[in-house]
Length: 532
Image (tube, rainbow, N blue to C red):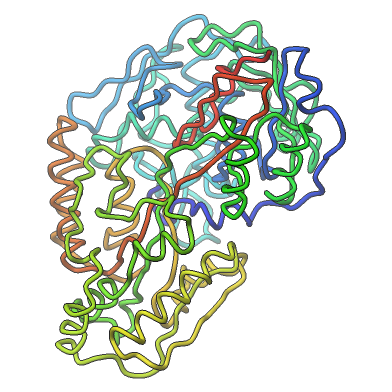
């Protein structure tokens, strides 16, 4: 994400959703014979693609809508609603719409369907959650004045034009080699004209252009039913007759209903239940890679953390492998880079000694930095019990390996955690995670580390310049070269240290097969699921 905000945090998203009573009732796995299936997960917040940053909303909208570009199973961009996406300079992009597409109400999908939707989401007064995703398009500032009380100069992005019914021209503020990947983000979906007549009503029963359409209105805090759209002309032809997202307030209840065959699928079994699930569900447990990683950030606006040797000492005093075994049954992947293995540009061992447990070297660096004065406060949210578990181990390590005796926990309600970090009210290292909006090294590095965007108050002209070179590169290989150089700068300075990459386990019933749950925003590829 770009502009004034930061990308979604997987841990915060999971508990910031509206909490509703689980509709456990009958009708899950025991009704799969009609060609449909039931999946359980937390309640979405919105079903308009540009107005949400929730992965649970994206699960639904990714099948209701089809973007210009989609991701294949390996994270590569492939044309979907677009027939071509091209640029000669990475700044001006020309997009051709694939002909013959329709929305679920039979309205044709045109260039204006995308342009109007993007303008609406980018217009500040509309307060859409996905507003920042359009911040690289020329004219964004005119729609979003710094003074939020000021009236915007316009409601149209100057860098966005529908040249004709099948052609979109996009002009960015600066060259951006990753723009085609950015187009895969759910916020870039089109909207029909009907959406603007009653935008709140549209949220309850959206009309998309994807392989599925709504089967009735959204039954809030209960379920969302989807059926196959017979007019769909793309490549994601459903292999089933529809499915239902059933809303749950807790993962534990979802898991209970999966075991009781009241639902057919859940994407993330609670970590504490995974050993049991492996024993009881066997081959129906679905391991999947993720791109979410935990990290420890330092508040560099506090002069006590200004010395890079102190930050490195804290990092090297943490036994990542030991915590992984003790808290996550060894299932997580210990970080060895600022990029997860699933991201192109990941270099095994790039983090070097910064991410390697070395108490002796840690103490040397700690002493060289002059130690630490005062109370060391460690911040984490109450989103998951595991956060406090491993933070306790970190605290013990810092006491034993560095000699820091005055350590206090600051356990913050998840509803207040992100605002606390945004307002820079923390007084010590804080636990957070990152889940990219699209699979690019740039999306892991720039939003987290760039001088104008990071939470740590870290500034580096060298890092910013290398990111700019990567963004303006003419090939992926050239871009990755510069992104890796920027990564080396960040590792050298260590304002943030990576800890581990999450691993997730889903589960299914015997009645469905061909399950693919990607680590990207498109999540479950529901159209591929077959029902027995």
